[in-house]
Image (cartoon, rainbow, N blue to C red; front, side, top):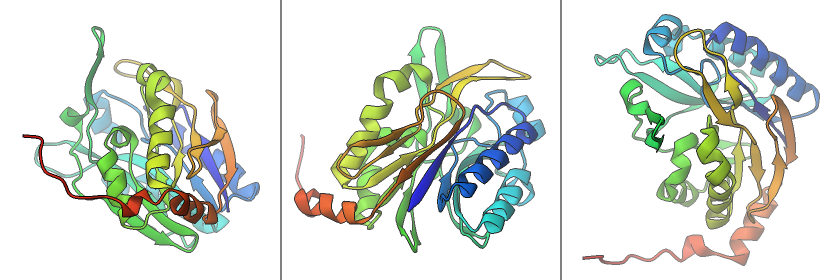
Amino acid sequence: MKVALVQLSSTDDPEENLRTTIALTGEAAGRGAGFVLTPEVTNCLSSDRALQNSVLREEKDDMTLARLGLLAGEHKIWLLIGSLALKSGAPDGRFVNRSFLISPSGAIVARYDKIHMFDVKVSASESYRESDGYRPGSTCVVARTPFGVIGMTICYDVRFPHLYRALAKARAEILTVPAAFNDTTGAAHWETLLRARAIENGAYVLAPAQTGSHAAHQGRQRRTHGHSLAISPWGEVIVDGGSEVGVSYADIDLAEVAKARNRVPSLNHDRPFEGPN
């Protein structure tokens, strides 16, 4: 199957981002991709809570979800909306960071809420507290499709290998890691982490990314690493999307999953252990 990784440089304007996403997704479908993936926070990349409260919507009212669902149906493609920032309706006012898998009929097949929050201090001048604005999820998700079993994750999740092990144990053959990866940590860790998750689980890793400097009408401007990657079950980089907005293509063959897992059957070798004390 041909897959397409859509690389965006989303702003804090959902309407602008939707126009770009529609164009690139249509381009990918026109070039024969059967599975198209967009990055994390496809609809709005912002850390300004006031602006988010003004432009974000709950799932049932989100225009990006509605329009991309129709687009998947029009083009008869599988579509992973890497994630959308959405209002949750929770009393504390925090949002959710939710990934959606859409079928060629336009129906939502699976949802996944990002579990691990990016609460880090990258440097003396750069820190993030994702948990201040977003409610973490608590459930890992696999989705069964005609072309394979998909394990859904988002961005910072990639640093937690036990999540991917659980997905692989649930028979996931394709691991999705849509991201808006920080440019500093991305340069140091992005490719290494993704290749590790592919190798240790004998699975394809598909990681569509945000890239570049993100225009902001309010709040600080962010930078992300880009380099959308497709990784083989043997840990090889199939395609690297570089740093520009656009679409990257890769062919995947699930026979390679079986081949990698037969060569190194580590999924069958987990053992219980005690300690450390």
